[in-house]
Length: 196
Image 1 (cartoon, one colour):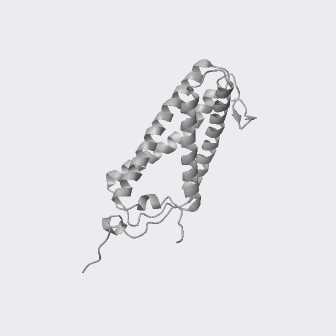
Image 2: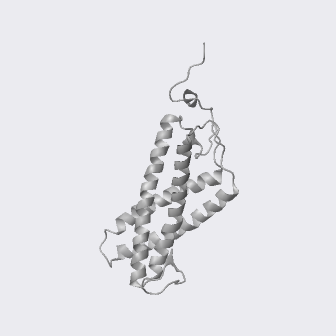
Image 3: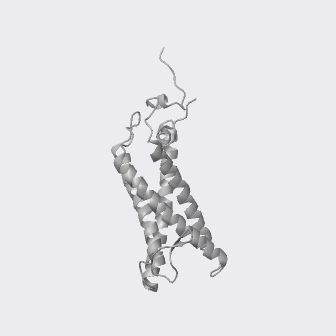
């Protein structure tokens, strides 16, 4: 009699018992960026509803800008690491050509947003009245006071932020789908290995 498999096991879907994981630095960068992006989205949505020219607005805008610059630095590190480290093999994972292409396009868009959003925010501030501060440290002003350019980069920043929200939602839904169809192997690739 053949061996039976529970519906929650990878073997039930014709998959190998364990898919290779990403490296520990890649995993750490992924989850750190995820936490930072979610915090930035929450702060951004909260601060735009605050009364203007108040201490609270100044605080949250300053925090948002500082975390945005930190996110930009981290995504640069992540891109550098991604360029030098090999991605794990897809042992036990079976995707259609369309699924692989969709994943590739969505990941590229995610990286593009993670690079362009903080850049657009920085440029919007550079063309405003106040200097950009990184956790209290004033950075060199790269622009000049120009309301039109400031408004343009603000709108660009906001539009990309909404696109990022949509891409994150798609990313989470894709992971949830793979939890049902691959027994959790896709998610496990981005989780640290814990000995039992």
